[in-house]
Image (cartoon, rainbow, N blue to C red; front, side, top):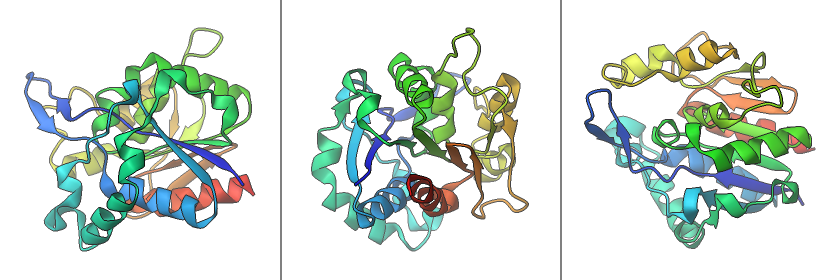
Length: 231
């Protein structure tokens, strides 16, 4: 049985360039589709967040006009894991050695807190150094920005990865007034960023034991890639 740590943002809002806030949190489908696949595979799943705070589900991700017809299924599944969501592990107390994979779903929450969280960085550095699988989807790869390598540079510089594209951010309507855009920031830090040929379609990149998915539709395929890597 594989042990999987899912790290969730504790942010409820995304602070915009002008200081206003945008309701945010965790994108329901990204958490559900990954958690569901890991559970079906018999993984032992733990959830952690900064300060052990209960994560907020982005309300946009349960709006059928935005997130599609699966939102009722997502909401029902979230109820089945409500106890785990109510009492996450404290990220600062997590021992990465206990896990085979660290997985980070998106929503705009990670671009508010996880990208600069020192405990997130500690977990990622330890997991990468021990050859654990690290996976993130959509805005989840923002969390990778928290990790500093032994030379003081970004740990994941030079690695192939994907994440929510600038084009998708524009199409979603959240690029204007954004403090920074994920794909651009990843490139600036030295990532070998890739995007799929069609926006909103599943696209997954694997670079060794680093696995990333571009958008919400990539959540299930990202989880499948994690399970394949776990063997």
